[in-house]
Length: 285
Image 1 (tube, rainbow, N blue to C red):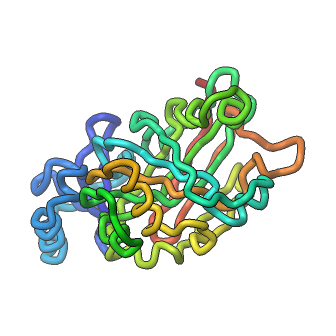
Image 2 (image 1 turned 45 degrees about the horizontal axis):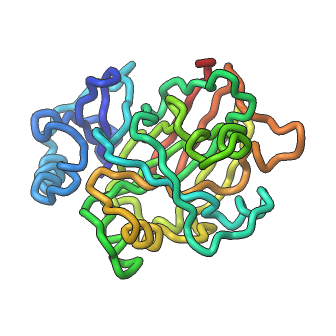
């Protein structure tokens, strides 16, 4: 299933995109798309049955904003340097263990919402990423297979980053990762049964129409199941939590000088096969 949330910011309602591309209203069936729903197999089964029966009312999507596909996210765990080609382009050694950092849930915006270049920023960068949405509480998992079994679904994430704040201002990476609007998410949450093999997805990103990133999750150093297993040994993952699993080569940081960091007026578009497409215009904060 392709689950999403539509409407003005803060007033989104749950919806489903059916196999014919018709937007269907779920608000009569469930309160929202959140961790409570994703952990409830019976509720998900009712949605599937209603979708199959054709009884869900259609929504007119014309002019309708698409919000983040998951509400009330508890935490966003991010994995750095998780693609072989991205490590090579930045001159970094592939990590022996996953590099873990956090983004605050309040960085999440809709897939086509405006992204703000922070005040004083000169190195705002792009990163297309596969987002993993947790569907079952995960603690001390023993295998990558168990990790995959705890995934509710997948979405497109844009891990927008300010490289000077991240790498040149001391401390952890978090200062360059948590500026407002720095995590567009969506358009859909595609359930794991429909998304297919998470290690066989293509990722692409364009800046002002120029293709910058063209990668595949097959390049991940630590695959999705192993990432979920690993993280579960350091923190409890709850339904509705999100893991951003890293970006492939092609970021501005990896380009020759002068590096083409983002400025107000730039337009970034990104997509992952089967998971949908995003488009953001950048403006000054």
